[in-house]
Length: 332
Image (tube, rainbow, N blue to C red):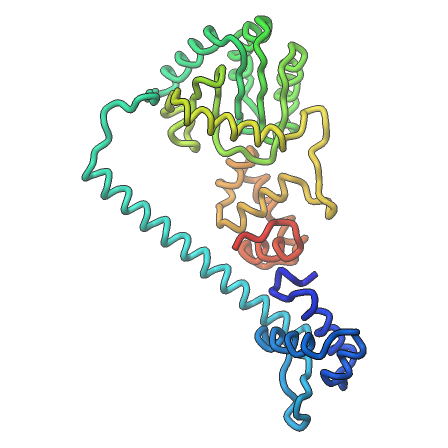
């Protein structure tokens, strides 16, 4: 139960017994718990390491349990400090790696053209490339659409292409973010696609916008924050294998649009879990909004509600408490 705090089952059992029976020594605890004396000694050592027990000055060999209010709070504070230090080390490592990459790039300029990679500059080139690919597609189109509710203009513009592709018997699978479920026009558009034989699912967040055609070509924006500025057309076999694997993994975890997104036993939605993870990583409201496909105002409301539910005074504390309550996985 308290293994996330570094307390194994045996030590937790001994600690609870010490709280309930403060006058028991090691021999009495061993008899009460049906444990070997050596197990009690090992539990003492672990609890002492975590500063959850201390020796009784006038009773040699007797250990006293520190109250949970004090002992566990100290333990949580220490864990928070370790978590913060770990994040600082990661940030420093990223900065060092970025600097090294920049220095290497200056010493070894990239060739003007890399096989399997074509640069597309601006919305016009990206749309022209996508138009050619949809004309040529023969078997399958897979797409990530991470921007939440779609604009009427984009949906209207895509309808003739989607209809042409689907009526030719091409398989089309699209993954949106969960927030599109609150956009009735987008839901109606998605239902129109499924009515023609396409498949649509949703997940809490998506890593980037992506379109894969016939598992041989992919279009990905250079900057996920501004997908219309520039993109790359990828056709290398190794790259496409990895991107197709990414799509299949996300598709497997996604929920069909006609079904309600799954929640965990604590009634925490996937969107809430994604927001908590982004909070713990230090993203701003604008960054969270972008990743969830919602407005900054909605992102602030989600963050505030989650912090209140967790009783957290800061976003960092919300992330730590979410890990402790099992709402997020602990990432050492």
